[in-house]
Every structure is written in structure tokens, then in C-alpha cells.
Amino acid sequence: MYKILTVVGARPHFVKAKMVSEAIARSVQLTEVLLHTGQHYDHALSGAFFEELELPTPQYNLEIGSGRQAWQLGQMILGIDQVIEQEKPDMVIVYGDTNSTAAGAIAAAKNDIPLAHIEAGLREFNKGIPEEVNKLLTDAIADLYFCPTPTGVRNLEMAGITRGVYLVGDVGIDLVSHYLPHIEANLEVLKRFGLQAGQYHLMTCHRASNTNQPEPLRAILEAIAALDYPVLFPIHPRTRQAIASFQLEHLLQKPHIAATGPLGFLDTQSLLRHARMAITDSGGIIKEAYFHRVPAIIIDRQTEWLETVAEGWHQVTGPHTQKILQAIATFIAPATHSNFLGDGHAAEKIARIIESYWLC
Ligand code: UD1
Image (cartoon, rainbow, N blue to C red; front, top):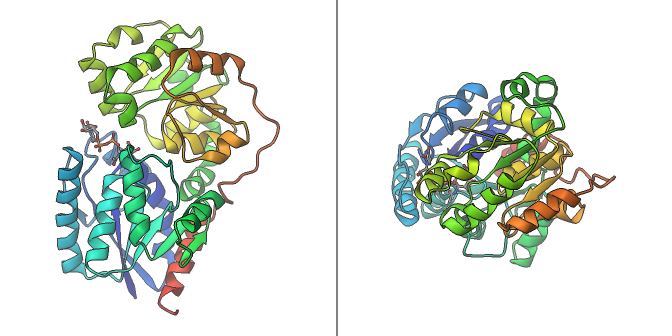
């Protein structure tokens, strides 16, 4: 048996880990120890996902919590290092691009433990983005790279990384595909917010670049305030704090805007699938919107999911009121859809490749 230490810590990890953890559990050669860094600790961002997705309770929770980026990273590395010393895993798995990802990667490399990066190779080519630094660090020291898209493989190639690279598809899409009948049928959640299928916009906003200063956040909120269309806005705690401290609450006091707290995975997917359009800076929502064939206005300055823009499903506006309003008013969905995110079986492929790692 080979022991895998999986490091999770933030909301998108729980979604990505679900299908991979299940594939590992089905393997007769692999066993998994789950470590939660505690980067996300609010029930709505963490515990709710474990309950809804029936994820196993992590054997370790470091309860690191929020703080300055470098402090948070350092605390996580120390905590993960101790668990590695105790558990002596054969491999460490990390997901995506958060601080928990980079911490798991550095702790694994410093203990000379093989490292698998799931959602490898994505780039925004801007080191000012905290997530970009995490991606660069993790991909510089991984041993197995599981890329969700051909673009991921190409980006790694450009960085001189060709060994251990596998194009498997997106593990988040595995999960959405798995729950699709439920997601499609669940109109209850629309009713809860008084929404009609195809007749509202789903908005999310939490990127540091959009929430650390008042100007971008004000520009985004002014755009949705000016819409004459219903908008549902589940608000990340970071954004909630920013709205309060920049005194922007009045921009949400409009009859067409329904603001609420963070929502669970399945409710979010149903709301997204039935939306007319998404307005978002979340990488997860961007790719899920593409899967559901829902147009999206990307209120970030760039995206790592280039294909969704190239195919015409999504448009990047950045946090600019007029650009956002114009994109929403003029958007026409394309007729073609390439399914570039894979076939919904990425997790199974990952488990098989990990099993064969020690045979090489
Ligand atoms: C993190 C990831 C981001 C991911 C997002 C998903 C990094 C650098 N960013 O961003 O890539 O898309 O998770 O949600 O790792 N907070 C709470 N409760 C919590 C967690 C956070 O209130 O449970 C608040 C705190 O004020 C905290 C702030 O949100 O300071 C930011 O949290 P942090 O974990 O640093 O980054 P996210 O914005 O959540």
C-alpha cells in the first residue's frame, strides 16, 4: 500500500478533492490521509462542503486561519512538515493555486516526498496575483503534473517541464458531471430567491485585486446596480468585509439585487446552470459556467481559462463599469462548444497514473 497525504484548505479544494479521494479509496494499492490546513474555517466555506459532498473528516486540521500571506504560508508549511514527519507518506497531493497548495508543495519537496499537482500548468502571466505565485512555486517542484487542459500542458512545456506531465481533464468537471441530474432538476433554490430560469444573472467576486482597494469593487458594484435585470450575489466573507469598510453597501440596496452569504456546491451549480449569464472573477465559476453553456462576463483583468474566451463563451472586461454593462448588453452566445475541460473521468485517470508511479 502506498500512503498519499492530500493537502486541502480552501473551498475550491474540497470540490476538487471529492472525486479524486473516492478514486483513491477504490484503489487497492493506495490509501489516503487527509490534511486540512484551516485556511478556510467558516462553516459556509468549509464544513458545509464536507457535509454536502460527504467528504471524510480530515485526520488533521491545522486550524491556521487567516492572516498576512507570508505568515499564513509559513504556518502552514510548519504544520504540514510535522504531519509529514509523523505519517511518512509516499506522495503528497495538492490542488490548484491557493496558499495551502504552495505550502503543501514546499513541505513535500523539503522532505523529499514525491509531489502531485492537480490542476497543474495554468497561468495568468502576472506575478502580482497571489495565486500565480502559488502556481509557479508548485509547478517548479512537482513530480507529477495533472493538467486539466492542453493549455496547461503547453504552459509547462514553455517552462521546460515535460516529464511527469499528464493531460487528464478537470476534476471539478468530474464532480459537476456526477451530480448533473440533481443540478438540472433542483429548481427549489431558484424559487428560494424568487428567480426564474434563464432570467437572472449570477454574480461572484472575491479576487484580491477586486477587493483589496475600493475602486475596482465600486466599479463592479456600480455596474450591477445599473442593470435592469435580477442579480443574485452570494458574497464571500472577504468581499463582505471590503464592502463594509469601503462603505459601498448602498450599491447593493436595489430591488433587482439579491445579496446573500456563500452558498453550497449543489445550489451554486443549479443557480449557475439556470442563469442567463454569470458575472464573476472566480476560476471555478468560469469553467463551470462553460460546462453548463452559460455565458460569463469575467470581471477580472485576465483569466487562466483562455479557451472559454477564445471560443466566445466568455468575455474579459476587468473591473470597469461601462465595459461590464456593454458586454452584458451585447453578448451573443456562440453555437460551438468544444468540451475542452475533459470527459468527466479525470479522477479515475489520476488514480491509475499515481498507482503506476512507483513502477517506473
Ligand atoms: C482563497 C484563495 C483563492 C480561492 C479562494 C476561494 C489564496 C491566495 N487565495 O481566497 O485562490 O479562489 O480562496 O474562496 O489562497 N475569510 C473568512 N472566513 C474564512 C476564510 C477567509 O472570513 O473561512 C476572510 C478573512 O477575512 C480572510 C479573507 O477572507 O482574511 C481572505 O481569505 P484567504 O483564505 O486569504 O483568501 P480567499 O480570498 O478566501
